[in-house]
Length: 481
Image (cartoon, rainbow, N blue to C red; front, side, top):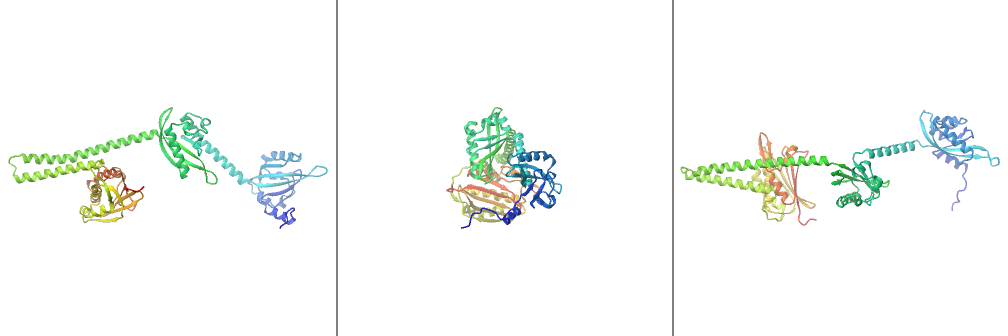
């Protein structure tokens, strides 16, 4: 067993001096440098032999000299140890921050100070880091004070830890009043519950989350968008959550007015489309009916006009069915179907609708849906009709069916030139027209839109970078949780 280390050899002491980051030195009671270690070259820029015999105050910034002299005098008078921070002058003209600790060595009999032993360490980087941290902290504090939004810090058990001045003014309560209080002590039950749910989501996922919420304040009912995010310690553990709430009342009201205007415009377009379609049908009905009623009308002509009246009436009935489908009120009898099989059964119909100029490709995987077969057919016919109108010169239409999580997906991808943003916004209106070449054509995708909604699904449209248009329909898959 090794003997305990009780003394250091001269070689060990020299090795310690060599490896130490500190400049060790012996100084006279007046401050003369009698000896310093080689670290003087790093800290002051001088070899130890170059500064030996010089006064230590030559290397101390003049603004710190008086402070260091007071520290030296207290050390000589026997008041503890030297422990001071000052600025040192480097040979290259720069200023370094140093931390010096020292002790007075006294004559054992007379008690007079014989020399001072000091250790000096360069703390410039540490000092700069502290100043940067202090500056950042000051900046953060200033930001919170002047931030034109409510900011807050919440403990993991959903209590307020800090709120900024904007929050105080908005809510009418001071930081010291609410610190430590749970949400339920400040907000109504429904507001507090949503705040707790938001915090739990952030604590569970470790990611930011947001909600929009209306809150009754003294100034009236306001709408806020609140964003919460985790605060972590040095180990990465979440110690609290913080958040910012923006008053979006004015923006929300403006958005709602915009939506109402868009809705009214869409209704106006719908009414105009319906009026136009029915007007065409009624013109045919009334015109042929008047001709048939004439005594001189030949029987053959009357039969031909009666057939035209019947066709126009069927067209009107189909228009009614289309409007019912758009409104999600078509008469259906849903049952369990394989979406791929329904598409495969209608392949001949689709090829007859798209014609020889459009190449139809099918990529089908089993995918269950709860639907009426007529609903599937209506959607497929809508896509086929759109493909013909969007690609008058021909192209490719690919229909894919596949399961995806809780949904069965029907994807229709074409090779058309794509759609501008304004067209995408109006794409599913029943009578919206798109200019293809010189001719405006009615896309009639509203039927597919309403049918999908009636099935409990959703429909999306995208224009990929590689070109074309992709319609994606997601329908809930029965029996999949």
